[in-house]
Image (tube, rainbow, N blue to C red):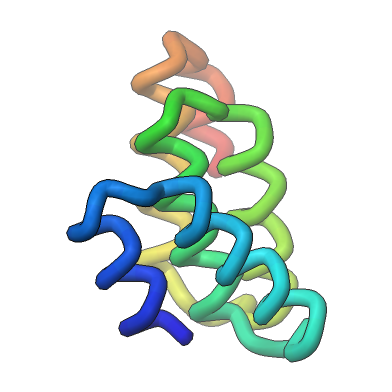
Length: 88
């Protein structure tokens, strides 16, 4: 699914990529990689709130993944939320 979503992005169809990832995340709710990829796509289209929600779900599924914390901090910094970035 991740590869297909990337192909959708390369083909210029981010909506299809997002729909594919959302569908896959519903079908496999315990897969943090899908939530993480969805967060990347949401952030790229400027929906920081949805991206943060997806990252937080990924963190719940993979609590030891420090990269997810770094990505959350970067997203929060990009939104001007320095306090949130520090606490991430």
